[in-house]
Image (cartoon, rainbow, N blue to C red; front, side, top):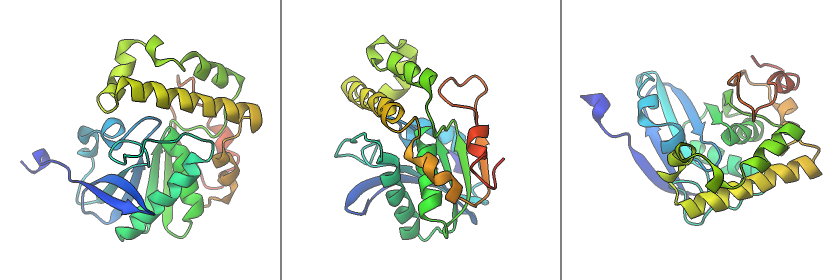
Length: 231
């Protein structure tokens, strides 16, 4: 059966960096999917999810941002402006593949990158979908990240999805670094990630999807106040 064929994966060079990506479908609606923190396209967008999309209607590109998944070496350096930098690789990959215009879809940290993609590539992005994404962190959020900084204290079933793609040492280093970035944003930037400052510049149709019990995401209405065309 056609749906049992492996989804093709590729490695290319974008802006001098090794970039891994996956491509599904051959339809007229182009989409770019961006994974979350210490994620990769295989972890956050597994094959069974992609196969729910009609390949005749969509062409989906799934990128591993620099330092994640197949876009290694080198390993990722976590810092405040990381998502804004990742956006360049995302936009240039889609232009190299001649898949503009496109919609951008981001999960968690990837949602902040998606915001920067929509801001930096306004002429190329025709819609944006943010899933489990927050552009701000409050006191409650900073405490939550402090409490989960040490992955050795996680329940085993919480670590397992990451360990399929990263070693335990890699997860320890990367997750602790992400928690440090979140704390720095809270302490030094008033809790506003750089993506929060880009929201008002985005005019394309946007959809915000969050889990009602997600303790790491602030009220999505806070983002909608600054997105002129969002639901």
